[in-house]
Image (cartoon, rainbow, N blue to C red):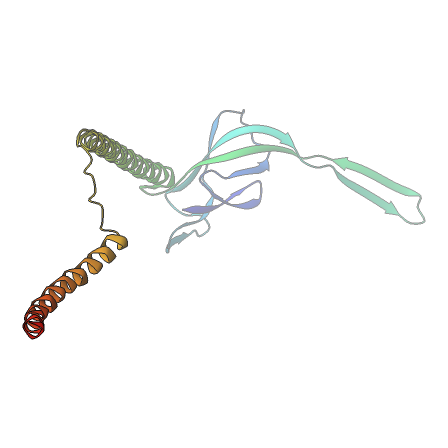
Length: 218
């Protein structure tokens, strides 16, 4: 919500929180002042235009301090009359801070306070939700770390048991494989047996021949 006010013969567009310089007012710093000459009040799509002022509208302001404006030079010159007049002027000003804009029962200050409270409540709600989420994440991380540590301990314990069992079990001696030389000797032994049988058969055949030859000699 904003308004257009008139003071000191000048018009100003103001809203809550606006600071403006106006011509000197008969008020002390820290006091409050109410400006009744409100020419226009607008709130979103709604607006009220005064003819010349808006009824039931007022703007409240707080006097911040008094000040003086920039120096202005006034120079008057009349040719052929040897007349020259030079003057300087600094306007006395009052610094105002707008605290409220009212139209009937509507108050811009109350709306701003309500919006700030809602924003603060929403921010607190978000902060609380973030804190709860952070606590839950920390708890889950602690559980995972504990489970990982337990798993590592179990693995180390099982490894120690396996090492102990392996050290207690005697090592089995491997059976020596038959060398190539023994295989060759076995192969040589087989033909030797066959040769002995053949020799005995030859001797058996030679025996009758010998007897026949002996009979002839007799």
